[in-house]
Image (cartoon, rainbow, N blue to C red; front, top):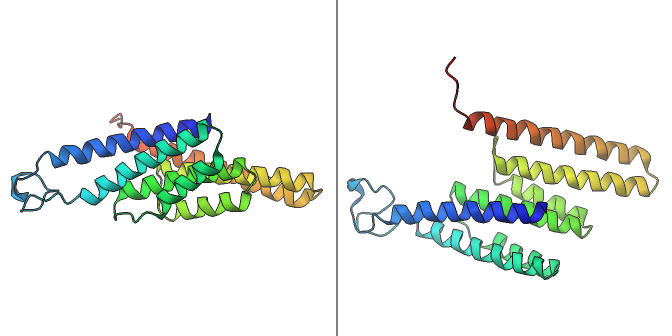
Length: 194
């Protein structure tokens, strides 16, 4: 359920991003001075690479969903790796899509027992997003799940001290997740003025 919800959230965010970019492109043909800041004077949309990237990301996530629904986790992983290999425009939206894609990849790898691969995806995703954002919080949550799985594996191997340390890291990461998401929520809520 967690993976499917992540995919739906990402697709919704991609749809909103594409709608915003499409709205900006509605100014097509008008000079920059007419209130359409994302259109060059000659009428060429400046955000065309971002729009193309978001469209490709949406298509690749849909393709990964199809693989997952048919039980082909390896196929879903390959498709999402294609997305992370795409050249991405320098834009916050692209960074967020890539961060969330890395989180989804990490969850898929974790489900296959590839803890090191999952951790690499989380770390690559964290490089794309800084500060208190939903995307950073989600990556830390997934890293906490990786550490929880590592603790279980270490306990099964009879390495109690190492398992306890991994469990503490997992709890710390999950608490960091809550702290970040709480900051996101508080920032989004209107102040009561009093």
